[in-house]
Image 1: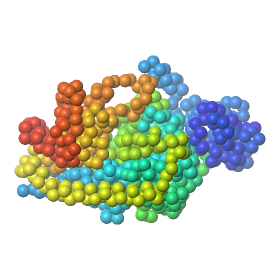
Image 2: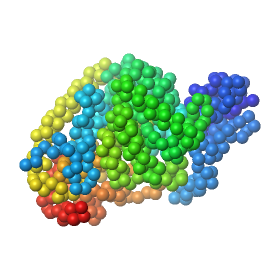
Image 3: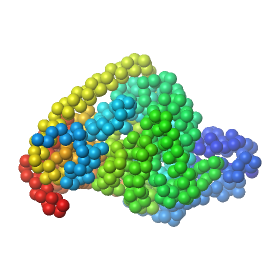
Image 4: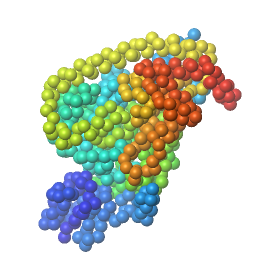
Length: 92
Length: 503
């Protein structure tokens, strides 16, 4: 039972400050969650704190490997619209 | 004889151009309605005083990466060396690194007067990093003014601490006072350990902003309000925002244009929300100015900007460079005090001279023909000091002034390198000259120290008269002189008659 931060993390520190278990540290190129310390906030908060403040979609994975904040859920940008915009920029 | 209109404009004299008592006349008078103690606080603050920004420098230290809200104009992937806009930085610093950087910059740039913490997230969502930095600086660099900008969500709980650290300037970004509008600007906030969305989130944010504003004012801390103008979303609404924040005691309102390009990856950028045109921004600023002292010289700088407004010398003070710098801060402080005193003397002299000139120059323009001549926008190339002292081709931005029978007033700036000067992925490339000409839309003259032949003829073709005859002259005097020449040549007369006919 632990969450995981992946490489799309932008190292903004927001999750570190709100983690009730002090499970998050800057080890390598991005922040990491200690699997042994992470409690998924069970007993502390109703919502998983790191996942509730993280601004980057897909940067935090739930225990089952799915993103806590899937594409479009934080920015409100429909994923297909984002993909289209990226294609337009590439094509310039 | 009508004398001294510049010094005591009573508004309502314009036939066009939307003049108002609080911002019209010379830009020097922008702050003249403020009590003496407030004026003393902002006279050397480049972000609060239009006049000071020609002379004093500022820096931001990026110690605050975390944020507690999402705005539709912001992308939290903030690391881009080539972009200049709020929320972007190259390296996040620890408080200790930030203090070292401040001392290094203050020693190297004696015009520096102000240190701000502005991100790249929200400073008050990083209370420990932000307040530690302020505490160390108030001890180790007591002559530097400290200021902070915030979205306001965590402001009420931080007011006490801010007051303790001698923060006497706070900027709150307030884009709305209506939660329905707020829901179109802020997709979520992090509040009481939950992510909250929609109208409910906007309502909480607005309440916290207003409460924070009231608490700061009650403590005598100067508050500036920043608002991002988003056409079709909050542009009309900002007039109401301006009224409310002024009534609550904010002393300056800074309405800034939305920056939104698809390549920034922001909601507004990707979804095609447009930015306002310069004239739309000016109209809104003029409309708000009836209620409020407006700021028009904001450069929307990066959260790690260094130097005079409009320039960024951050490259000279990267972590590895400051590491090897030996700083004698005591000596730097003495030098800075001497330089600041000299600037103050120059400003006082300039103010006195302006008082003397004001009546004369305006009287000769006006002389019974008040309201007959339409206002004219002119662009100016300057590298500081309030002078026309920059080559047209060297300008990365132009200051825009409006000349009218009521005097000269500062309107804003136009950037030439629009927000991004990076590689080819950052938008379509156009020639630098074509870009400059587009940026100067609406201006009828451009005053610079020198200009080459090619831009001269292209500018003329575009209806913008280049003028290199006022090199090294004070900006406002030169603008007024060119305006008088325009009147004398009869260029403004017919237009004036047309305007009067319309009215």
